[in-house]
Length: 402
Image (cartoon, rainbow, N blue to C red; front, side, top):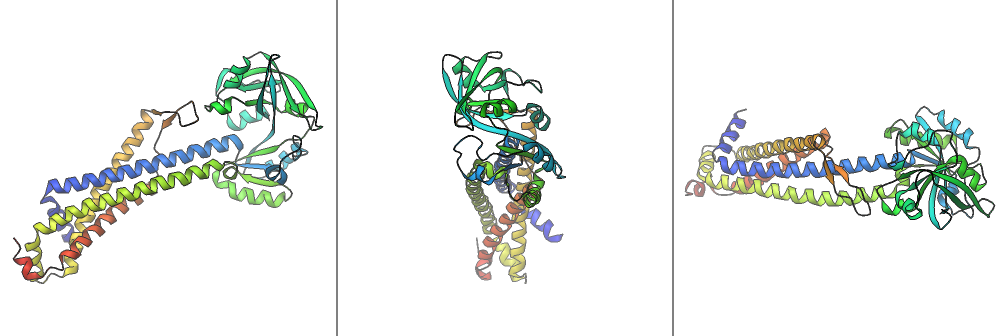
């Protein structure tokens, strides 16, 4: 306690210099936490988006994921209803959604446009996800309705399609022949990605299977209780269904790992630069303090104070300085994070998108504590390094210093 009081009084001897050093440490800590919090928010948003689209696990035949299909659903799943029931028996499984994926043409009688379609069970999708599509016009058809389509905004614009208009779906069936089916537009949707809106189409599962002339489905999307259940459930279900392949949402969303790797490099470099700046500022502050107290240090050494004690005292000053700045920076980061939730700030659309997103900062307790401790320890080490160099000066020279 005596050494703490001693260190605090020494810091107050030059308040302006101490405040500047603490301010730089606070600024660096806040920048690190805000950047890291933005990265955590981005990861969470990407995870939720990927899981919302594909589910926690995708169940399909091995060749569905690894080989090309000569005809639609060549490597699809047979007897999907029985498989769904077996999957739901697992305690971690909440919902199992069938999907039929295919491509073809959508025509309005005057022209046809290429599209990528997904056949879904609308009622089951709504039960599992809630409202999961952004409707520009129209809405989700009622459960049990057949022969409907939801078309992307740009695709609807190209075909002049509005809710209620009749169109024609064309696709190559499992027999290799071109099949067609009349459908009615139930709604126009927007994903926020213009390229995707130019070709995206949803239809009901029955219409997709009738068009392709098959009772098969492409995959089953499995929704679990939470992210922590993904690995255990994958292991259990893989053992139970050895003939099938279960892919996690992360394996299906290759962009997720790419974004994480990019952000890790960017924010890792940023953290290193900020850390160097904080260390240099604190070290510079301690250099000035040591020079001003050279005769005082010489006197203490002449009275028998050990170099290790003096180095410890000066390191304690740096620790207090860094800790003060880090705590102020953490408080500022938490305040900014809270304000962004109360007063949302909209970010501009990222490349390839037409819709922006809210800026949020996710701050967890462990990263905040680690950052504060790191800044404080770096400051202490910088001060100890400066003090160690000062101890090399002979006592006589230190006493004679002016």
